[in-house]
Image 1: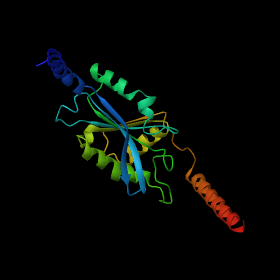
Image 2: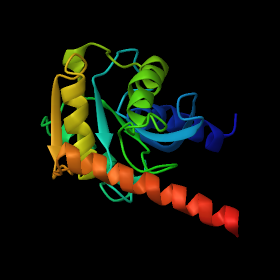
Image 3: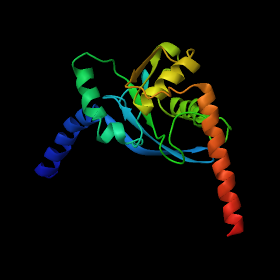
Image 4: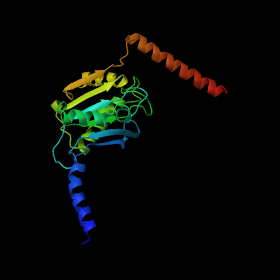
Length: 206
């Protein structure tokens, strides 16, 4: 056998275990949503050793802010580098991180009052079951956390309040939460409704 080929195979055998221990990030994953009636994207961080082990991992749902999408924490938040370093230094447990897109169709993490856009239902009824079935995630409450920035901070805050049975901890960062009263909120909806009706009437005349 050619000496160069033997050397190549030897180096490959050495490199494979090292390569399999690296973390991986996939930021353009797609799933179908019956609730939102469209495809939804999400990103995922898989920790070092995921592909070579059979163990299950805790999970962090990490929500982006307004104007970003599922790639925000990957491209601008450097989630892979920061998490790898935290795990290496023993500051964070080995975990899977799920980063869903909340910027396509309509922006935000909540259902609207008319129940026409049900993102929160999608998150709990479709996204979480999908990823926790597809990846080796520990599904008990004590192994599940949620965090987010700005709009995502508001999402993580409300989700933890709505479903305390699912999350052991929540970390809202600079959380964007509405401060207007319920009456002001209803008035705003009524104004938008009247505006839509006037627009439809104007289009019919034209």
